Image (cartoon, rainbow, N blue to C red; front, side, top):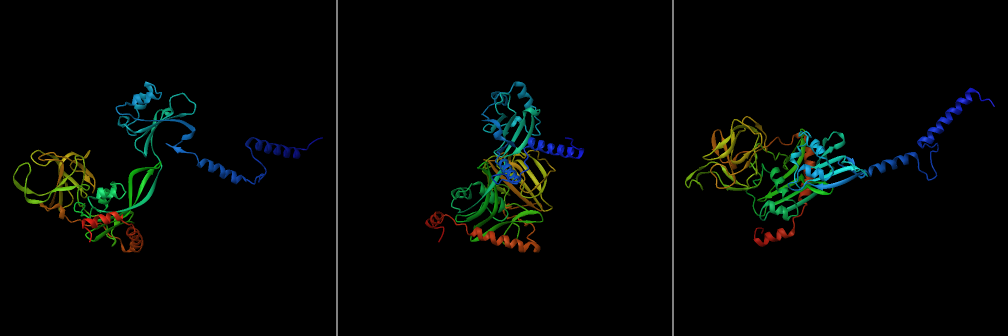
Length: 436
């Protein structure tokens, strides 16, 4: 039987469709016997992809992974050759540009991973060094030892804590079940309005915060969501709010807690000597003026510029202040930081510095009996007591933002006041007679 050209064309098209369907697994049936549609199948495929475990930016279960730890005094060559690298490969990897990572900075105790194709006996395809619990560097051995930086995914857990000062904010924060590092966070936030060198027994703190976690491991990274500090029956609140694209902490009246100058040039340490026109010098054994405040702290403690300014002097004074830095903040104020163990890396005369920027580290250089910072302030060329320097606050909440701010403030203040302090703290204070 002869088939005309039109019918022949139709048959060819049908055969082509059936062939493609067979090859690609297509089905002309919209619904199969169990009621699963193509859309459902696609969703199942997406769901299965979502379950793939990604680590170091790789589908880690598809590889063979060996984990290790950098040992004390272990060289890079020893570590790599232990896992099958040749001497040439070690050399090639060590040539990685130090703009990405300097392999000489690998530290004992840091984790690393050697990743290869499953069932492969060749040199690992990737070498991963965990610079921290969150950050890592991946060396792609098969791609000319290319090094790239990455971060493990993290999440934030919210929490709250409240407590009473019995010994020190650092200790009592820990007794309240929170990291003492949060005491540092509070000193940063309230540094313009609360004198943390003068806090008293019975002062109270409350805070809401978020802590970062990586693979369910807590990091020492915190974000303060709101806080309050009560001293001498006066409570100062710290309410975060974004204004003019800048997030600052404000008090309940809408005034910024951040001033032009910090209350102190370092975090939460003891004042060992105050401003005086006649102080007995412990080394020179005679009375003379001490136009500064001495902050006793461990050697190496970071020292901050108390405000924005310009470095106008940096040097060493053998017969007195040792290593020192002098900063001019404006036409009125100049501050000096003395007895430093060392300067911040790269700091030089003429540099512009920001408030809270590290300019050096506590030491005992010059004439000194122990590690401390001698901090001095000059106003219009005359020495003044650093503890009385005025701190002008930043711009308050504007009229256009006040309604939105008050809504946020009222909610956070209510939540802060609702955080209860452990009853044993109150009972202990009552026993000590500090609470009537």
